[in-house]
Length: 327
Image 1: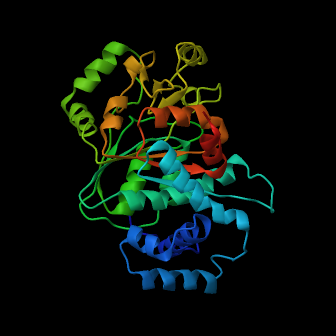
Image 2: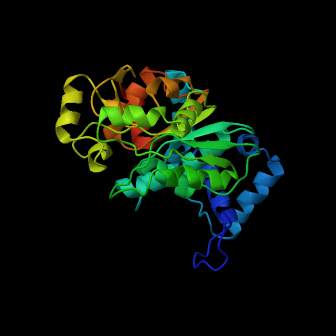
Image 3: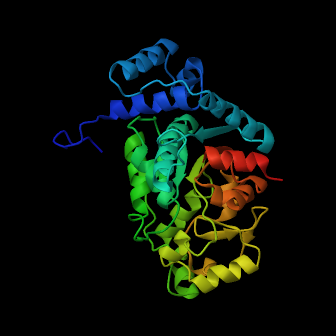
């Protein structure tokens, strides 16, 4: 989607790209060569971009010894959990003050947007999930076309008080990648199992669901099973259903489906009424970028890692440390 030149937003897509390069260099501690490789540009280009960041005040340099540990956290996560890559965001407000969730999620989303550009390759089919975290990533994406990419919506249509319609995430990311986009023209959850089965069998829906069985890249998050879970807030499940799932061993929610600590599906309602990618099809994706914010998602994140449901992990610093300290 073309940028609206009449918008009151004073920042451009280039500004967003410069800011994300600064995050990788100053926040994650990547070298200029590593960033150049990720963006498929020359090292001198990155040098010039970092200089422009400083000259224009996009980044203000303050040397904090703890910041230098961020890239070490990434390497430790890769080694500990057998990942292809890990991305750790850092967000501090007022020195040592602990950031609130909104600020932390915003920073994580900016790092995850750069991670997605790192993971996606020309010709890929990319599955995009829904939720507060993925919507934040979509909003943080700079425009950087990748040739021949197809984006597929992985969860049927749903709107909640927290997040816009689920197709919005897929469309936004597709626009930024200059990709074709296949939305899932069905509700995320139906009123009955019979209706859901019938709708999944419709040729248009069946074709889209089949695309989700052969993804090159999947980007999604995982929710916890606490009473404030988005699954309840969006009206997809009742508090009683979530509590029953927890009693049966569920510790995380992926694309409207429960998983246990080993990353295996927990087959309980409302699963039979859901129109969304299946857990095993996510696991089959060649590259899986999972974005998770908050220490309170520790068990859910462990389920993802135990079940080999992530090849690339993007987390905030607090969760990274908690993961490395967990048994």
